Image (cartoon, rainbow, N blue to C red):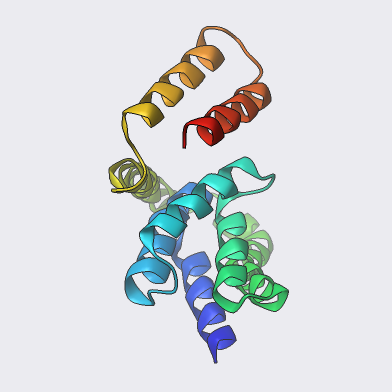
Length: 174
């Protein structure tokens, strides 16, 4: 039964999220932490951090990690991953098939323009969620963030090196 719930939950997330993985974060958090209570807020914050560091889209990485955490099996990870990807796959197939007919349609163009601010709002919601989590940000985290930001923006340090060093510093501090 948990596999069906995982599939439905992540299929719904994949179906109603437009704008990529960062736009998915607030929906995933609402479903898995608030609604189903499969994981707690602290674990969710860890999942997001790990999903950002691993290769691949953050939404898919998060779905995979949550699926594995909830079922404690690779099958759960596979179900959640397929479910979150399937709506996009189906929609892209339909769009590719129908695009030539609709690409000059004023309603189609207007709909896409209207979706843009919603995507921005979803991404901002995810950022606010992560910054305001009770267990996530303290003054030491802000210092690590500030140094990492400065190193990548003005110091032109390789981001991979910054991630590794920030992880090491976080390991030492926490």
